Length: 190
Image (cartoon, rainbow, N blue to C red):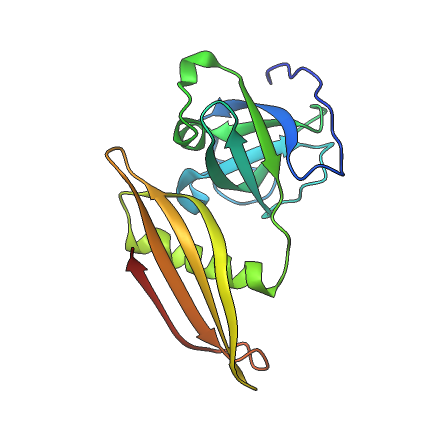
């Protein structure tokens, strides 16, 4: 039922882990209870033996062309090697791979969980709504500034890909770290 994945080395000292990805169109039911359409179909099923959990995001890179996507774990693959994964077809294609190849050598990492990652994920969701014909393929923090004792500003850049072009959008959020309430946010194309 699931494709065979050759074994790849897993070294926790590396930032990127070598693995292999197959693709899927998903299904209506997932082990995580999160739809394959979540995150604009930038979703993945990971091995039941992997350290990644439901809802966690993973940055996946195609080492052949350096394209990257950030995918959300929505399902599991029973008894697959820890470095095997099934990307949704749209995420597979966003890596520049043709589904006819079947399996793709990839590198992947899990972004560090932090308050900063949470606000980056928040702006990621807003950016995807603001640019409906694009897929967010990557994002990175740019700056974090303490404006006052009760106000922080965080800035992120988002790489967006459509069938015709690649653009960058910058998202900014100002929030109160004590109450966790947002004072303002904005997104602009660079």
